[in-house]
Image (cartoon, rainbow, N blue to C red; front, side):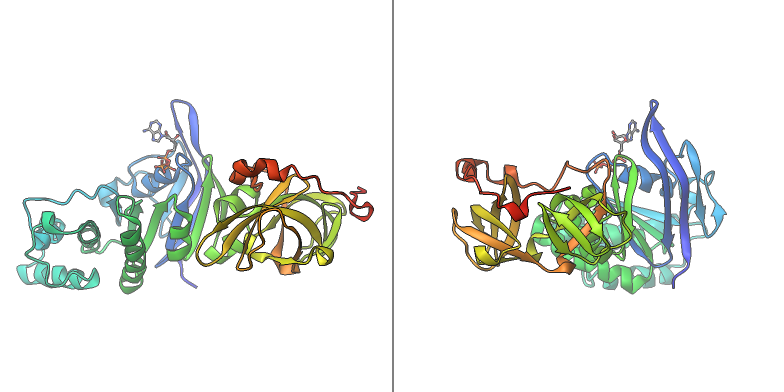
Amino acid sequence: MSKELIRLEGCTMAFDGEVVLDNINLSINDKEFLTLLGPSGCGKTTTLRIIGGFQKPVSGDVFFDSVRINDIPPHKRPVNTVFQKYALFTHLDVFENIAFGLRMQKPTPSKQEIERRVMNMLNVVSLAGFERRETASLSGGQQQRVAIARALVLEPKVLLLDEPLGALDLRLRKDMQNELKRIQQATGITFVYVTHDQEEALAMSDTVVVMDGGVVQQIGTPEDIYNEPLNAFVADFIGESNIVDGYMLEDNVVKVFGRRFDCLDKGFAPNEPVDVVIRPEDVDIVDEAEGMLRGVVTNVTFKGVHYDIIVDFRGFKWLIQTTDLSPVGSHIGIKIDPDGIHIMKKSKYSGMFGDYSSYSAEYDDISDVTIELDEELEVDL
Ligand code: ATP
């Protein structure tokens, strides 16, 4: 178990009286790749700036190696930052861009030491042989790697990265995600990474911190966050989710649309109202007669590997991802295994997410097909 390197304790930030970070508590371990993930304006950059020392929280403390560093200025903190706009020096070649920070250090390392460290960094970012290239002649991904090398060569304990791949096209982004993960593992430097791209966060991170409205919504591994979202916001923001109302009848049994479903969740009060998350890939389509629920297909989109199918269950539309085609208008049944059902406490996000009605507006006329409710399905709570 890695030891804690940075801790934010009760950090709150406000601008002009408006709270933009509300009581943030966060622990970052040595050598960890931690990602702050959330929609625009949720406070990711502000959190990063507090760690970097560019912003002082109005209340709360920042610790580095258990030492309070609130009053330590940015250049005296063992951190370095890579921004989306990486602004390389265009009058200097690749080698000199990377060497720049070392030449500014006091005492300045020897010529041989600078040479050794820059060449080592070029290897780490896979740019060996590029040392005398003009930066303007590099691709976007290569320029970004120079920016990363320039920050890493100073051997910070922590690298802060604020949407560093934001300016790159999708293909390059994917390549650079792998590259960044590899660089982080090769150097053992703690990365604190900001993105609003959930796929990017899941692909690279050891730990993901999901934020919304200046509040940390969940902290966990990518698997935890995806499989066990704590509330409807997290479930919706991380991947696709059908989120429906349910009642916990007892441990391991939830009632949804009047039907009992076995699940793996426990510890709720009897009849407690809950949000139920069902991922689109966890739903099996079966014959209507065999289904736990029965619905009508209102939209089908071919996605290459699978179909996105929208199914209307009594006016509530679900997204199902399947390799079996069920044409628009077909009546289908669905089955969900207990581990495909995840129960969440009700929250302020309940009812806001997880209905795919808007997905297929053009098919609304088809979804008006009324589905007969049979007696056994009536909700009796
Ligand atoms: P994005 O992904 O768009 O960069 P973010 O999650 O990084 O968003 P922040 O940049 O941390 O969000 O901003 C959080 C909130 O604080 C926003 O509402 C923003 O407008 C506000 N904010 C940030 N910096 C300032 C500032 N210097 N003065 C006033 N408001 C600010």
